[in-house]
Image (cartoon, rainbow over all chains, first blue to last red; front, side, top):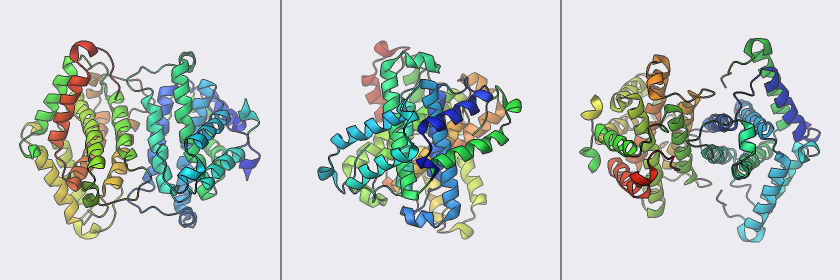
Length: 118
Length: 118
Length: 118
Length: 118
């Protein structure tokens, strides 16, 4: 998997260059990026509209859904990466820190098998 | 920055272990994850509700907004990473491929300075 | 039910007066209202996060969920009504027209019992 | 305007009949309706993606935007009305009550001209 060899910094750089070559920084302010993340997240959700929840294995055997999911998830991530570029955020630090805090908030032995609220 | 040394695979692994230790895979089906990405994206947007768009530099000088943005962006990403785990998706491949296709869809000399539609 | 005696115009008027007395028209431009509708819609969705879909009867017997749903649905509607005020839209006309078009798009005998896509 | 002669009950009835003739009640459970409200709200927001906020007057002079807004707002409302049908909610009561509570939460003389948070 490319995920094992690609740093988050590599992805941020690819997005930054793409945006810079088009002079799109002026559109990519944090508020408009947050809107775009929302819009793309809803397009991802739309793939599942009116369907019963299915586990990952079932979806993995449906190449057409999988392709659409990959497409929309990429859009969500592109805008998240652009937000990180605009605000000089260290996403790895942010994500790994959040997991550490969630470990304390949801101790494994207390929450095993029980839904958490976001 | 940790983003330069952290692979996307590292982040996926941290999320996978966190979920696994709590036996939460049963909640993290693709449809419910798409919902959660949507919910967290809207919480990110809420930080900007009723405000005028400001550029990144202005926001960077406002530590309290920055902290909230980091927090909500982490939540969006956690669920995206969990979706990738559930569906065995290679996010780096997906994101870099999408950028390649966007390069063709939005040639730099045609779209320089002009808004794109998602 | 008050719904049988209350015109859509009555609701629009109540929202318009509330906004006007606070001089909030300057915030309620169409783009920021669309954002707020999105934010409130996600808060409504959050009530159902990680739950299995339940039919209306089951939810109706859970007063605490019902209260939260009513609360968030009210917020979505308040912003929709404010959008209608800002743009002089006739919501009844818009909704009834859309139903007429949907009747043609989804003929009852073809779509009976089959999911529609939005 | 039809809004002055159409009760909320009239709109609920039109939606209920449309859904019933297609035997779609089984899809329209509260959770899936909340998802659909979210999806349509994001489509409404998409009309404004990457644009600067404009006041109502400016948008009203742009018939093509206005048409799209009407279209997406109708979809948001259709699902809100269907949610009310599924749960026997009195929307007028809910909306008018919420305005009453907001009047206390945001006293006009304290909040005049100042943004409120949702």
